[in-house]
Length: 296
Image (cartoon, rainbow, N blue to C red):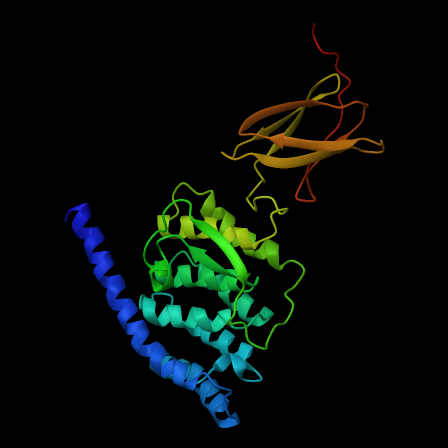
């Protein structure tokens, strides 16, 4: 099969998915009004009754408007088959999470996006649900709607808009660590050399929803701090990315940032003492000054 044929098939599948979505959305829009107590109970039962019942309930009931809508949706997300590939169904579920913000829904989306054994559309839906928790809606150049779950977005053309007009009444604050939890999902995909292109580019776009002051959430356990001589120290970074680190000299009034690029970065302290290396506020390495004179 040629590359053109593969791309054509993807376009056809996307078109069918969008057509299916439109059909489902017409039914859903008729039902997206404040649900009754019996409808909410119906939705609770359906979320535990299997995929077909869950899909039907999502189409008939504005679950997010139920008093316990977040719990209902979180239960649904935990039960979504990891091999789900119906992009119209996944997109509809994603739009449900766009209408509310709740820690329970956010927590349920994290493992869906991280499951390496899951189908790519399901993981992409999980990424979007995580970003939805931070408020702004996503606009993408050329790739929008359910196609986001199937087609890698083109490089560039990604930006955030104002708060979604679809946000419902449930808006609970996330935990203080939520932005870092999201970054820990996005960043390993962004900086991976083996991540699927669909997830890598989508994660790269969604990362803008997270506080830009949070540095890349990567495994820095391989970073090494070494004493050289005099007041010179070396940071060895085994990762292919720059790491915004910092250091202080224990017991001294000295500390500053160190932008550790791939490979070795050498810096000197103004005072003599034990150097502590930090990343994202966490202590990474400690190294004493060995009081060795540097060779001319």
